[in-house]
Image (cartoon, rainbow, N blue to C red; front, top):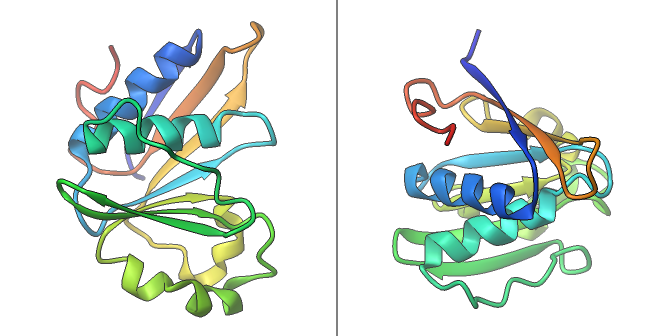
Length: 152
């Protein structure tokens, strides 16, 4: 069973801080699977991750809802932000350059659309809304040996 950590994120700043800690640990070949209902904070976490990984708090990070994937050149190498909400299933991944993107860091919203192409060694991040408006519960599973010290 992969290691799991559950964190209470009281506001968007806490979500951004978690994203920054994850960005510091990410390396080429990593896949982060962002799961949760609409409004759970998947895009906010991905945006904060990419800004932290780029070292640029003002980096423009548009949602890939319509383009399905956005690419970024980061100091650690390329990164790809996938939003698979509109994808019918794994058959459409080839058109998006999924295999090539796997050489970089991939953030994937709606990873259920990956089907059998869902990577075994990925970090699963399940986000759920909590009681307060911007609060979330994040459960991180995977990345054996790399989640130590992830909690603030």
